[in-house]
Every structure is written in structure tokens, then in C-alpha cells.
Image (cartoon, rainbow, N blue to C red; front, side):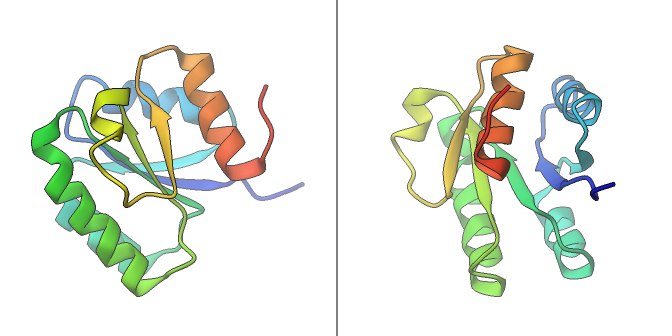
Length: 122
């Protein structure tokens, strides 16, 4: 049996974060989540994750997300980081390894994560 892949989900939207977490868990991923970038930094200092997923629901969150991404990449250049955002916000940043589209279609969301982590989709 293979070990489930681990994801750290950073999302300050209290209504959406648990839904995304559960969709990922149902699809076999181990998920830890937080609403704060500083809490994410602390978890990253204690544990390795296969993917860091940072939610950007608006342009105002870009500087905070880019700072977290830069800190992660400085500490571990090989760490996979993805921003979860819409197309318009995605055009305004270049920090992550990939963008996972945020229109909430659970299957498309999981497919984006699976493609990023495994190179496959369902």
C-alpha cells in the first residue's frame, strides 16, 4: 500500500476551506489546512508536504501569497506550490509552480491536483 500524498491547504475562507479539504480527503489525499500564512510557515518547519496549495480569492491576497511562496521556495526549492485562483488573478502572479482553477467543480479541482502531483487525471 502506498502512502497517501500530503497537502497543506492555506485558505482564509472558512466556508470553502473545509469543503475543499473533504473533497481531497475523499479522493485519497492527506490534508492539513490553515487560514493563516504564519501558521502555514510553522507547519512547514515541522513537516514535509507533497503540495502546498495557497488560495487567492482576490487580488488583495497576492502579496501575502507570494511572500509565503517565496519563503517556502527559499527553504526548499523543490517544494511544489500551487495557487488556487481564478484566471484573472492567475495572470497577476508568477510565483507558484502551477495554478489550480478555483471555479468550484469538485471533479475538476481534484483533477487539477492529481495532474499536478501525479501527472494523471481522472
